[in-house]
Image 1 (cartoon, rainbow, N blue to C red):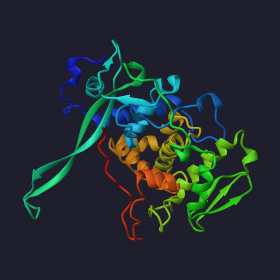
Image 2 (tube, rainbow, N blue to C red):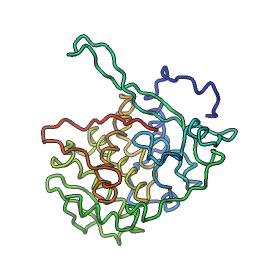
Image 3 (cartoon, helix red, strand yellow):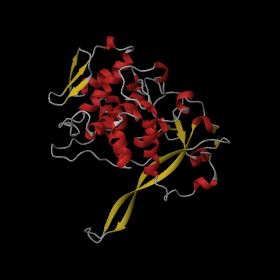
Length: 324
């Protein structure tokens, strides 16, 4: 949409969750594909790094990383930067005529009265919106310089090896299948020679490591669901979104559209529950952070893994974090 003063007005009456869900559900219906593939189109794997704010340098997370990633401009330009109208204005830049804004969301805590609460009040998360513009439509913004391997050591080729070593799961190489076994806490991988490029092998490793974060000693998700069930589809959707987030951070091949539409079985869940997408993206972000923190440099720079839950902990349902 083009940016106008009218679009700066509040959007609280809009059903944002429904809008975002409709976009992803429609994408699934239009592609008609089983998105997880053993092969990738190299032309679609040269995407940029994870979406980042042009002025703060902060990465966008969860649903915002997913939705901004669906935009073609970062892929075409090789520039992952975004910013709000005000940020550009405050920096002495301006939005070019005809620029297209992209919707972002965050949760803002809202305190309300509640007679049943001990102090008579309770806090609920209120879904709020903001708009960002891509760097190619912000005049006056310096050219993009991707971080060097020294500045971002997790983009080096050996990054996945470090993550594998620190994941806690045992790896077995051989055969023609890639999968995680919760019973034995083992990841089975075909040899890298079976893949067209070693980067594709590494991206598949990340997918399976994401599954392994569900082990009781880690994030403690229920991994007992049968193949083809709704619960299985929900786990796969979260793990595949997380793989998208991790691979973009590590500069590994990824295809956002392919990831967004992971399993057709997830479509029914989206259609019946408009907030499933928001929950899935938040869960996926938590999984991605857990996996990325297996890299010591990333953990030192961006924080540590979430506290390990006890075996009786409920399923993971973190809230979305506010975005800049």
